[in-house]
Image 1 (tube, rainbow, N blue to C red):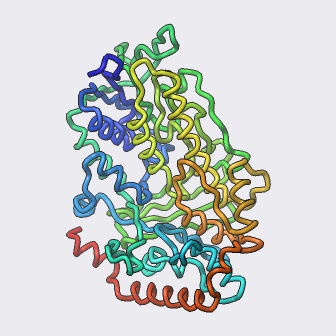
Image 2 (cartoon, rainbow, N blue to C red):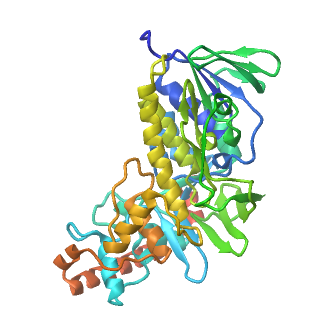
Image 3 (cartoon, rainbow, N blue to C red):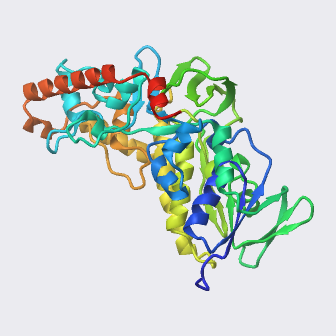
Length: 452
C-alpha cells in the first residue's frame, strides 16, 4: 500500500446508504480497514425509505456483487418503470428512450412538430416503458435493435427492510461498533482525529463517511454550510403509511392535491403511501456545499435533502459512492482532490433540484441552470448539455412536456424530415408499442416465471 493511501475508514450509520458505502468501497479497496458505527435510525432519511432507483442501479449492484435475479427471487426487489402523475391532464415519466430519432433529428423535436400540426398522440404513447407500465406489465429489454424494447430501461424498487438485511449480510465481515457520537477530536489542520462515543470510547480513522441521514451527525461538527432550496422547492413533511402485500405494479402513482403531493408505490410484500404536505420546517430541500470536507464525506441524506417524489434519493447516494471510489483522495486529503469531488457532486445535485422544481405549482424565480434549460427549450425545444446529469434527455423531455411546457418553435433541423413520412412512422411505432404491451403477460405472472 502507498504511504499516501487511506488505510482506515469509519462508516457512521448502518442503514442502506452506510452499508452500501461499506460494501462498495470495501470491495474497491480491499486493503483498507473498514468499520461501521451503528447509530439511531432517522425516519426522515428518504434514501432509507422503501426506495426506488433509476436504471443506474445495475452499475452499482455490479460494484457490490448483487444479482438482480437473486434479489427478485428472494422477495427483496421488484422492477420499476417510472411514475404516473395524475390530475386534470395525467402524464407519465418513465425510463428509456421515447420514440426513435430520424438521423440527427431527436424524436421529441418530431413530436413537437407533429403536435403543433395536430397529428401526434400523447408523448408517453411512444414510450415502451410507459405503455408497458401503464398496462401493469413488465418484460426485460431486447437485444434486437429493431425492437422498441432495445431502448427500454428499468430501475428497481426495494422492500427497505429486506434490502437492508441483504446488505447487512453481505457486509458481515466488516466490524461493527455501537454507540452515539458525542464529540470529536480535531487535529491541527482541522481534520477529525477521532470520534468520542457515548460510552467514552474513542474511534479513530483516516476517513469518515457520514451516512447518518439528515442529522449529518459528524459533518455538522466541522462547520458545514447548508444551501437551502426552500425558495424553489416547497418545504414538506412526509407522512408514510406502509400496508401489507399488494399487487405488484411497476409504476408509482403521484397526484397533487390542495395540501401537497401523495405518492403510492409497491415493493415486495408492501405498499407504501407517502403524503407530502406543506409543513415549514419538516423537510427542507437543500445540500451541503462541501459534502467532502477535511476527512469527512457526507453521503445520502447527510449530503442532500430532497423529497421522494421523483425517486432519485438512493440513486444519488449510489452515484456519490461510486464517485468517491473514482476520486478517492490520499490520506493527506489534498484540497484539490476534495474540491473536484465537491464540484462534480454539486453539478449532479443542482440538476436534480432543477428537475424537482418542474413539479412545483409555479417557478417564477429560477436558478441559473434551470433558467438556461427553459430558455433553450422554450426557444427551439433544445436541451443544453450539463456535466454529471443524473436524468437523461428523454427524462427531461418527458418532465417538460408532461408539465405542459412547450417550445415557441421547433428546431429548423426538423425541416430535413418530411412531415407526412414522420407522422406515418410515428403512428406505426406507437401502434407497435401498443401491440407489444398487449402481448406481454401481467407483471405478477412475469415475476412467477423468474421464480419470485
